[in-house]
Amino acid sequence: MSQMDTIIQEVTVVSGDGEYKADIGIKDGKIKLITLPGQLGAASKNVIKGKDLYALPGLIDVHVHFNEPGRTDWEGFETGSKSLAAGGVTTFFDMPLNSNPPTTTTENFQLKNSRARHRSLIDYRLWGGLVPENGHHLDSLKSAGVIGFKAFMSESGIDEFQSSNDEILLQGMKKIAQLSSILAVHAESNAMIHFLEKEKKTENKCTVRDYSESRPIASELLAVERIIQYAELTKCPIHICHVSSRKVIQRILEARSAGTNITAETCPHYLFLSLDEFEDIGSLAKCAPPLREREEVEGLWLALKNGEIDIVSSDHSPSPPDLKEGETIFDGWGGIAGCQSTLSVLLTEGYHKRGFTLSEIVTLVAVNPAKRFDLYPQKGVIQVGADADLTLIDAHEEFTLKKEDLYYRHKISPYINQTFKGKVKWTISKGRVVFSDDL
Ligand SMILES: [Zn+2]
Image (cartoon, rainbow, N blue to C red; front, side):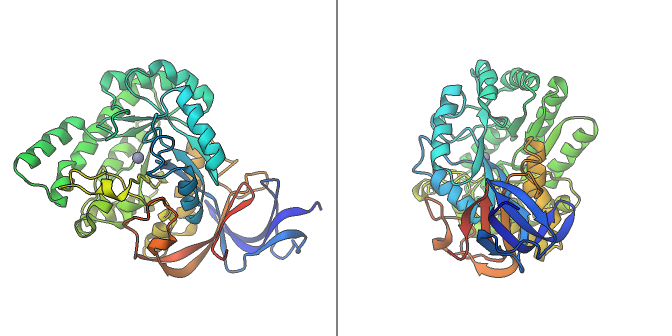
């Protein structure tokens, strides 16, 4: 047997459909061998004792904003990827905004890609943007290697990434369908948000609750309905980003059973924080769509349990602390810094509190993302020949997240001082140890 680069001994391997004990041999960035436990001796320079640990396929976070180039002072590939590694993530998909320039042309793609290649600690893919007037770039963006395209149905909050009107969406979706690619959508109704926000401000109603009410579930439903109709018309595969309510999920499931190629993601903040916490925490927990009532949080957990939601992604969207400030909650940056804590939330709230199995969790953060975006079985599964992307966890260790534990450029997050159960001990990306709890 040729010498392995790394051996993991007697670990419990978690797949999408169960668990088993094994030794794992890693060579040249790939999983080379999986044997019965105790079979692989110390014939390697790196031996990890996995006896009390679970090995999960490395997490794939399909939705982050690392803001490089152009807004690297907000995050950047180096700090962002380090944070993900600490959170057990081995692959991320970076959104086409809030980098500047946004990833809407091949030139911009190449610029971002060269930054990511040099600075990211882990594997990655890049989203392209669908915006007004870049229809003729979709072809070349696809050839350059984008994982899919992202469009906004409401304002993005970033001037250089405009939202798409119906015509842009339809034209773009027709093209994206021809390219056998996929469109990810920020689905909120611009008209409804504008109307409600204006009304709130005129009446001087600017509390956290008012902000949430200005972007109601109905606004998500309205936009999702529209994009579903367009997907049926154009046959464009779509992925609905950051769904905040099971009511939206139910409409998505209806469309799926009618034959629409549609998936959905929710995010850890919708699973961990309700409007009550938002009122306590303030702008650090501001995002769009906003946090909802506690019953919606429970609705999402039920949907996860029923397999109704495909993917959990972080939608990590950080900004410098001063941009989170503002006269009222309507003014500060709408984005949550949280990508280091996705697995912490799922293990604590899902595995420990609600009886989810580790297989169910792995399905949401590794198997389904890999399958939906054609990375399976290179990723999303622990098997011979797959990339050696592995997350080793102690499922029972408790910790309280401290500011200094965060690797973000700006150490702000609504998860600071929260106590979690289940800790990442090792993260291995393409055979390289990119995080160790002991180092
Ligand atoms: Zn986002």
